[in-house]
Image (tube, rainbow, N blue to C red; front, side, top):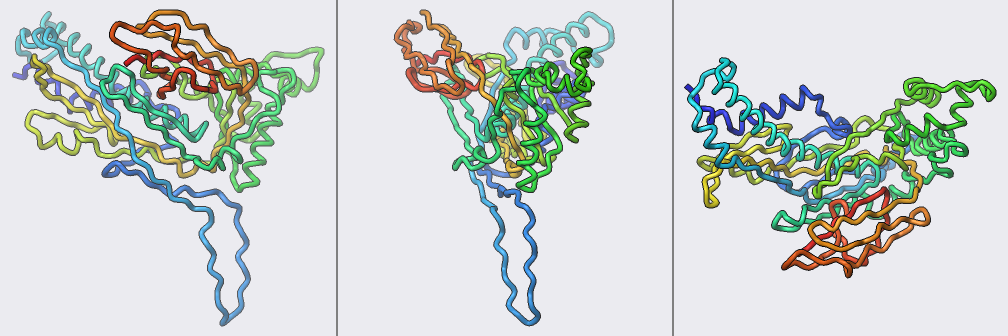
Length: 437
């Protein structure tokens, strides 16, 4: 006979998480472009190759010195991978509910105890699934930011005990942004005057001039809606018969654009919650279109977590790995009550070896900053840009009353802390959250 409590272990949780992920078709959009790899330690290094047009081989003479060609534009990138981890506790009430149930062999035997046990265990496992999904989400956040901007910042929430804020810039000299990130002449949101097909042809030619053949174009759902409404595309599809214009479905528009350009169109509209609980999309839904000239852009590189490195040798510390490098740990903590804890941890960072096969077309809209005062009180008015790309000055916090015993300590912008009064250029409608210390 197995006690129900014994079913709650790291290996069972890992199997459950992988199984649910497969059943729910849980692959995130950019996962396939950055396949997982595992390495030892924290330091990540990779060679970033620049795409070059082939240069003709030089003619040579018999019995003569042979010229040595230098390797073209190959640079080594080195950085340190960040650690992500959170825990969830199996609280005393749930433990007592489990321990008070009789020993059972089969959770589907139809008895009342069996049904109650199954419901309780399902709830416990579903709760832990949120940690696993959070680990996957952190990976996708980094991948999407790399593809669109070449940089990102990761920071934890202010209630996590120890503040973490790391910035990663894969384009420190700005050369990639200068050559591979191009502003559209007319925003696609202007469906009357913009010419998305011409813009795409121009970007594809820019890529071809660098030896890159574009095979896929990625955009958000809002951007795709501009294709649906674009008058030039509508006229093209109707044979310039303006008098008898016909509206076309999403599949028809997608098929037409794909055929016209000879590429695959992909729409990414997956979203998540930031560490401060604000819902946002991984990929910009408006103002950005990505052009890919490679199937693999880099790797999602995993290091060895402390739990994996040391946990196997600690009595009572149960560890299993899932998805190459996510560590699932189950152990007993006394603080002061005995609590069974599930910890999900990962050391992970994407490499971006083929970043020069990625091009972005963007246009600027006017964006708004919304202020969330958290547990503080007061009123801070929203701020909206009056011109594209305008830097806004974050509120200095002078009108905010902090919670008792705390003082205002700036704003959490995405995953980065910015001081009150700091300059910030929003690239989407953004909610910033007050930080107190």
